[in-house]
Image (tube, rainbow, N blue to C red; front, top):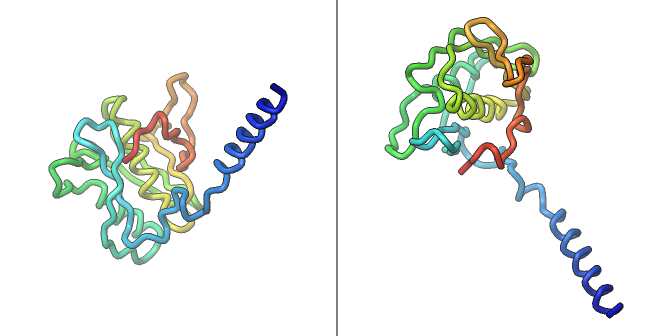
Amino acid sequence: MKKKSVMMMFCLILVLALTGCRSKKETNDQSNQKGTAIYYTNNDVTKLILKRKNIRLKGSQIQKVQTLLGELQKTPKSQNIRSVIPKRIVINSFEVNSNIVQVDYKRIAENKDLICRAGIVYTLTQLKGINYVSFSISGEPMLDTDGTALGALGRDSFVFDELPMK
């Protein structure tokens, strides 16, 4: 009996040790792949979908952000995906301050708002030196469900179990 429990404990430790042994290349590091990552959503607006495009990002950070926001607003050619920034969304303005992009826009329906923000955050934070995106709605800080200011969001602000991605 004691031998079985020792063997079981050994197997458990081995399994736990091996789960942490992934190489850095196997994680979500997309930087070594060709093309610029643009995030779209499925037609139900329930999942983010990454597509790589050959986009020339040149000029200042402001110009690069402007280019990516423009790409996010374009209607994709595929019938199976949609832009994370629908045509009815108007981006009023954006600023780049240090490593944060501040985006001001008009609000959409709550359930689609999360996917929109996540797609913008994931697309803009691939730029070198941009780590966070903060959002405001028509000049007012975006609030969480409990009424507190949402603040700057990074890639780690979205839990994958709560934010479906493909």
